[in-house]
Image (cartoon, rainbow over all chains, first blue to last red; front, side, top):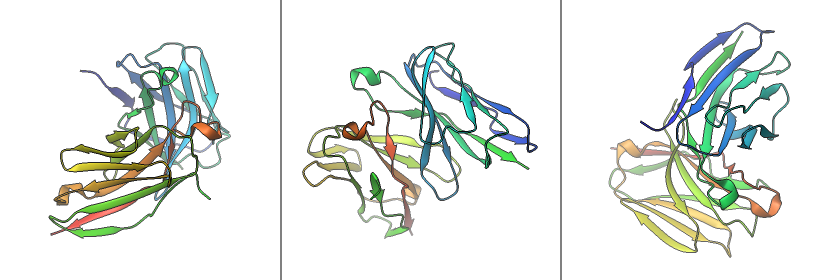
Length: 115
Length: 114
């Protein structure tokens, strides 16, 4: 069954703690993306990766870090430097942006609450 | 001016009517346009892609693209209560360094009333 999985679905953390969100895909897609969505707002791009061992900052990368050691996996770490980490985090992938295929498919999301 | 702009709504239509959702974008050289549906509390789901001027139909959905006027629209025929959701427009903004990314609008909330 092909798709994108994110875990956990809900995550609660204390302020000052780093937390890592998981994103795995078995679609053989080259590119992966992380977005955050706040209530009533659109999607904001945090980081993206078009190829293994390479990634670029999106519009709101401060306070976040990523790695892309495997094609299937693109974990996101929310660090204590992120001022307002409580949000809905969405991972997406697309097959071959370099070849003009920009359609992105989303995982189910992780809802992070930091208190 | 926002790069991808949508009316936030809510847009209310009666069941069985046609719902018309609009999106304008800032970049004249954009080539790829997408509509996503997002139910409350869920992740976005891709429902339509369009790349050429004109209409593209898929079931009850029709996407319309006019590159000269820089707008893309989504028509939903025979609207059902299950169509009630937020619809996100996404554009690959090639001309503004968008590269291999999509820029999303903030979405239009659609309510289909019985």
